[in-house]
Length: 456
Image (cartoon, rainbow, N blue to C red; front, side):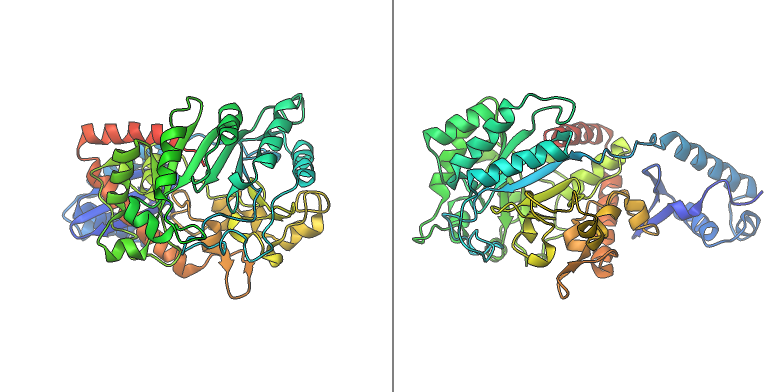
């Protein structure tokens, strides 16, 4: 009898002190192993025969065979059903930049004060109409259109115009249903017209706020140098009373938080207690010190990477990275298409214009960006990586070559190594969490609910 009852290429081992885990990649099966069993399985993975392993072990040949049969049966039972290939004319998210300006001057802003190093401007209604026509022509379904900037609430004319165009469309065999509309805002603009638009059209709102007044107002200042917390708090308190809108926060974890000894958990706890809403904490672009510093004692405060992997392991669902350009892309105030909102203004990453040639209608442009077709098949893109089913890594972070200002078809190995190490730590935490069955059940149910409610 050979070792072919299990394909060991599909198995990855994780060890930390006296803890040994086995991950079967195709079935998302995570198994805790004794040290003896781990050593035997690792020897088999390295190519040793079952008989040779048995001769050098205190475990008999029959016991090893029985162990392999049990594992094989477990893997088969846990294999998820095959999923159909995604439809090509469906967009998950279109980020629509209706404002190339902002009324704040946040210290860490990656968009250079909201204008992406371009002329400060607002999208016109003519460009908005072109966007609408582009969507009607190219897609059978658009899950979500996100109004973005700059600060999108500086351009309520176009926000309302776009919503009304889709609202008046007689949905037919091409575009079959109404997109959901979302706003990502700094929360400093609040007036009756905006509230009317929200009540009438908007499903989701993400508000940028960095915790309490001290921490928010250290970085999030207006042009005159005034803090923004009080205005944001009023915005959240007002909008969360509207029944048809789901509102969440996005907090940026900064060097100032680190200097003051404030953790991600403390930001999340404050936001939950003060505003009673969910959200997430992201890194300032040059802050990485805390990457693995989280506790599994509070579901609400877990980073998204943890909750995503817990969800994937529990429900046997592979994590999907952002499929930039095909399923998710950004449109600038001038109607130019970019792979990601982080790329807006980078001419070398311009994918064409919604009113002319673009990546959706030009083979020449499509061939210039080969990565984007590959992103739909992560296993094909990263065939030898054990973590491909659990990697929700940002393609921009993994594939963008900052030196040459382009997207490569192979990921940055140093960043992939860091990502794999991070995933291993999360799997070790999940294994520990599963030892408490009641807590594990509560977390799984809570994570499923959070994933279903995920917004922008």
